[in-house]
Image 1 (spheres, one colour):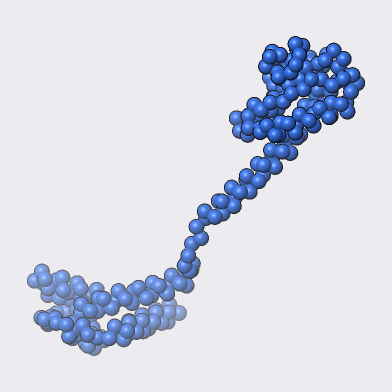
Image 2 (cartoon, one colour; image 1 turned 90 degrees about the vertical axis):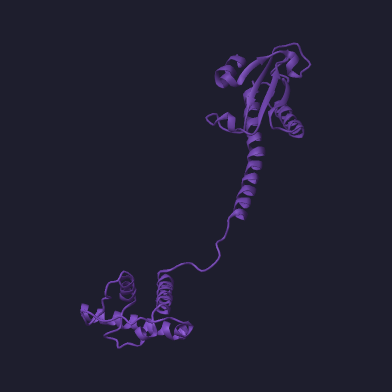
Length: 245
């Protein structure tokens, strides 16, 4: 009756094997139960270890212990097998007088869970630590709205400075109302290159001075020009705000 009950409960994990495969000194019927530390619904392919619990009933079973053996189906060391076998033989002696195989199955499964899930926890902890070590911590200051605006202001000022280096000194020294903006000066230069008259503010037509550039034209102090650009930008922003109100 016990064999039939085990077959019904364990199904494909329960099978009869030849006595020569059992490692037991008997010619009686031998059986093997496949066990793992995971629950039945888990995927066996991901199970790191599997155990074969082998048993055979003696003539006086259950008044004497069954013949027991354990073997590794996957990933269990011989020392662990020795410890588990001794544990199961001790429990069998404590359960004499009753059918005990399923009790031994439950005990073996619990031992596997405690033994190998502990190893799995340690391995996972090591893997997490290794992953932390591989994380690259970014260096430098984080970009904020304020830092970006400050960088853009400086960039625009430097850009204006570079454009100013290309403008003749007479254009920079002209009265403000007649001074060409960088864009107007650039466009007037393009028009002059095509033979057209340049366009300026404050007049419909105005002769463009044909100036030869030399190194002396570019010796202005760059910091002073930056400050001049930023001051004009600030004035422009203030005028725009007043017009908006």
